Image (cartoon, rainbow, N blue to C red; front, side, top):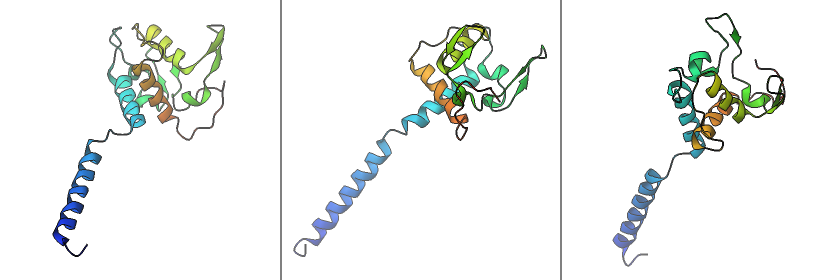
Length: 144
């Protein structure tokens, strides 16, 4: 528009400033936020239990196998999200990843597991899914 060039330039500048402000206020990727929260819970949360965290036994963020002080070897959790659901001989039933996480918190940590569907449990499962990225789905398969 030739009659009011400064008005057009000002409107574009105002629109650009509003777009930048909106982008800065936009929430981060919700999945990335859940993964980050899950990683923090995995590393630091005791769930009111015996003072241990998930990472106490599942070292390296669960990405590597570990040997417990009693000599028992734990496989990594790198493919955990790719092998559940799976049949648990001990439980005599099919167990989901969420169920296994809750059982591990209850038994291994002596803690209070987050309720099914809670943001905390969703975050832990999202974290485990993130470390299984690229793994072949092998429902019922063996931990690596």
